Image 1 (cartoon, rainbow, N blue to C red):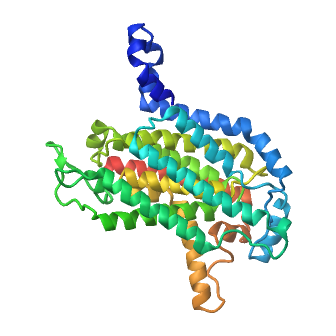
Image 2 (image 1 turned 90 degrees about the horizontal axis):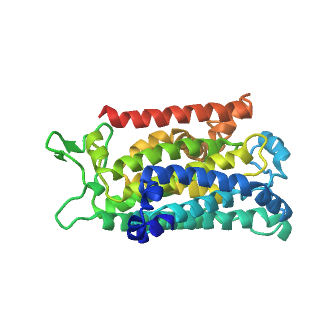
Length: 390
């Protein structure tokens, strides 16, 4: 809104020699940084009121778990309100609406991703966390297949529209390239598309997009099981994704680093910045001992945003490297469930996701969270360094 207002009044501001005082809003780097600061401030300022409201509505975590040992551990958190993801989603939306160029296609789709997954998570949280008030026979949240249908449906829509927008009448587009590790997108010094690039077909692009959006959404959701764990990791990964968006959307930077140049994707840095700020602000209330949990409302939304930006900037593998902790958590659940069914009751881990296995192995919760933060920061640095190595 501010950016569009600035564009509308640009001639008048120039005529009255006032443009220099507000020209900083035309810089994408400034708006991304300001979005981070604004979303952080929104969560920080509204946090106490929202938490009090959630407590009044009795929207609390039931403290239930599949493992008896964890059930005893989580009973101490039974009265902590959840669904705090409304703070994250609201802060992201407000910051983006104020500071982003809303005429950009990729930003419009990004807003749909935020609203879609936040609404899906909110519906699941509301059904699950008000079940006790409605009676023991009440439905415990959305069924897994229902959530998956909406996640996959969003992934298909994102893949189709992003692919269509990136298509070029003159031929193959770098917006459809499958970026492999250490692969050079440009052949220097001519700065032309390098030979041997893999251009995804529409079907392959949609399938990949669906897997990334749904997979990342579920990965963050599964990781959200300890105070500050998902919020801290999401902060680090969001900052890394913000850098990727700036690089992919700036032609000189993309060509210098030999990565795909995707016109218009730089605006997603505002979305990534707002996400990082909102996660950091939420961490203020969610650090141990947590005063609120994000629930599916925040977790599904955060994962979807990271996956969506990875698709647009054509850096799925780099973002997956940044999200290594999320992927390990997701894989631990898949392996545990598959092995349990195949062996009729045996387990690989004491409990899944993996952070619960570590806890049952004697690690203190703050230890687990802090070390996974450290690993995530290192992975983000490594992932960004891998771009330069090429």
